[in-house]
Image: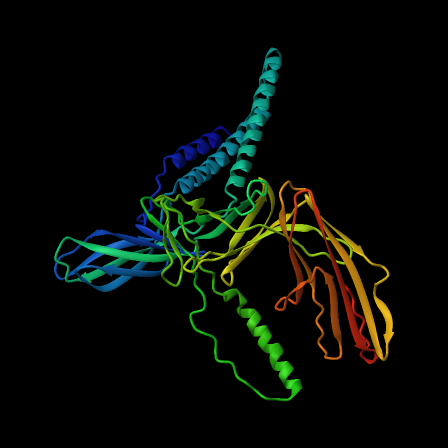
Length: 503
């Protein structure tokens, strides 16, 4: 037993003294971050080995590097040879995780030592004096209690470390050493630029949009931030970091569609097959373009994709959030109501037109009113306009009163059948200031000429033909109300057998 204990102790000391032997990669000079990957570029001088017309230098790329591209100045690249090599992660996070893993190995050895010590104390000598029994028994209880406590503490620490290491990490640590042979170099060093792609980095846009109707009805505070992540295994120091909205998408345009005239049965079979093929292509839809920047961020929207060069030049491995833009949009707030047959709520909204030359990336947004978060949702500036909804306003109410004498089917006129509905919508505003309200109702769509639709409103409704909607826009004074009367009549031949339902 005693011999086994000292054997464990010897291996424990040997493990602690074992050095780590691996190579490290160069910190990138610049990084281009897209939503799904990153391109790292390294620039600098390289020492040349060998003599004569053919000389050689080496570069190291990390695990997962793709699309390696090399450019040298003052010489011609003759050959690139690659071999797998171990890469030592150098980031602060990687070093911390390495220390945790080393501690796990230490804990395992300490647990075995505690186990051996417990076994020693559980085996009492066969012969001992009666006078020594009481002292030996007390000592045994004290030592075993101490050992059980130490064992529980080690088990707890092991669990905490394993929990800390359970987050996604770069498990493969094998990179590549690239030996480059050049011809025609006249000096002992050569300017080199090389780049590679990593899929372990990216970013996404995140917005915060705030309004305070009690202070201003025309000010929308907009903050655009970038949530960035990089799992390269090393920290980026003194690196120019640029965000770009473009991601790898389809390189080749879709095939030209065919126009086939065929029997109806075959047409529907072919259409179903084409829909399945189109659905499979949906993940390859191109990303949206990007946003303007504040003064500290250099912005470039002259190309196909929007780009921002960040003011920070250090990005540690892990996650970070960088503010790109803070701006105030001067757009009027609008309270929108879309009642159904009996009830409805009033929501705060605004629309902002995107000026020509500005680009905004799709992202998630958090909305708040008067400092109170009202929810989150997608931000998407499509068609040169973005529509923002800030949630239900509890200080503005909508009351719906339906005229029960004019409800549903009302009888026959000749050989036609008619239906009639009538409502009154009352908006009440308990704010101290007036608000602008837009009330919307669906405009019934007659798909057959024999069906006629008429409506009688006070005041008269406006028509949005594209949305098939009726709407009214009006001001409601502070502490006041406004009522809209709306009725719809539908007439159709009895033979059509329709059953209209009023939403």
